[in-house]
Image (cartoon, rainbow, N blue to C red):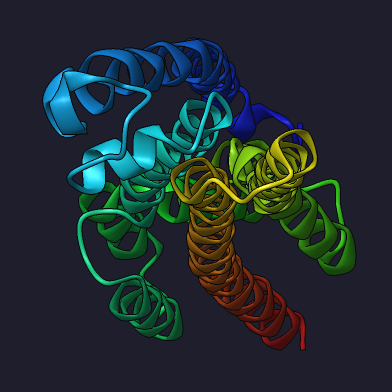
Length: 279
């Protein structure tokens, strides 16, 4: 009986989970293809190099980035992934928050509960929409069911409402946390790939010195540029990933706290009203 209110939301969450998984599966290869094409046809255009020769000294920032070597498009793809997944998470978490302020919504729910107006509280959920409202509406439905349940005592009814809130929350929260693992992974991968490019560039620089015996300034500067460009892209990717990951976890924590706060109010209101009625 406690599971009944949460059943309608299950297909929606499974559909959202499937869509999010498909989005991630498509985004990763598309980002790699896009950045590879940019690297070859935009950054590698002969106009960015002296005399139109790609092996010559670059004359602008595009040519300088191209001189970073084949690892550059990979790190560029990581950076593009962070941007795309961040936009996607902003949209998803924004929808989960609902149409208005979550804090204001929770205050309205608490006010309606204190007044004993469950129907008005449910109507606020319909106006708000989103994951928080879905969980609270599910709890309010269970609240109404428990009021009409003659075979359970107050403690059992209160426990049933609390369990319903936990089940509804467990259905909603995974949708918010999807793809965050990708952003978190890019924190490390961005740095390590940038470091790999740095090492490759320095190996080439020292190899050119060992072969010629006499420093070739153009070749040496090209290899050093390769090392530093990869370092810069790697650090930029990791820094952006860290910032976005912390932003999203903070937003999710705020939504979780709002659900806990409203759920606690529902449980306490039910327990207080029915214990007073039994006296």
